[in-house]
Image (tube, rainbow, N blue to C red; front, side):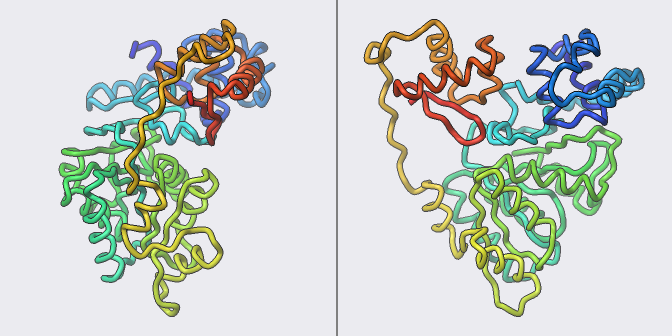
Length: 367
């Protein structure tokens, strides 16, 4: 990535009044992150949702210095910046409207495997939860899933360690910048995580592990994964927030049931009781619900000659999806240079012709 582009990304990331949804809207509207800061404020204010307060912070000169400091830290420590329009950006996360537009990465993360599970739960893990978590990951290891969690005490670190033991890739999502690690007691596990996996964070290097950062971190944990598993939880807790976020993303949620009088099973029992999670008793529940136990059938090849003649725009979209696989609506608009208001109509026509399939999260793929 060019230095100028990287600095523009980091400058936008430092604009505190610009959230992730607004940032992506700005980028899509101007077409290029590097062009963003060359646009006139009056032009940007015509974009829906961009007010004078946001514009003021966007062009704050302090952000340039902060971006340069961040870049210096990244280069000195060989960290990577993963932009939401990059191929390396987590595909599942890209489907989430409030996903970060930029992530910082460290380690050997490889997201080609689409079997990704988030495992979270209480910090006060019981022997019952620990044994189940370890046994579950051992049984699932034949499918070589990626295990995602937040590196906290209890369920999180148990899941990371079990993944490492079974030689599975594990990903830690941090609630702070790379200049520190929280909790400090888990620093001893960093090398093992880095050997087959790594760390993601959306926070700049100086960001502390503030309470609100953990809530933001939870949406990444839920969004990255095909399913979220709650091992144990009290009646209230961060893992229940993660479950709620996963449900809002239309992802599968599983919960381990426990005895009615166990404090750290109440949260899971309630999730199951109110149909917010599937009851989890063994790895078979996950394999069947996610269709991991079914051998994937090869898709039939699409022969263009079977369709009604494609328009120029339809042909462009068809070629793009054939080359890149399923894609988000905004990315198709950018890569094919078609305004979104036109693109939605064209994709509908292609769906009626049997060429494309709409997917959750404004994603599209070829049939």
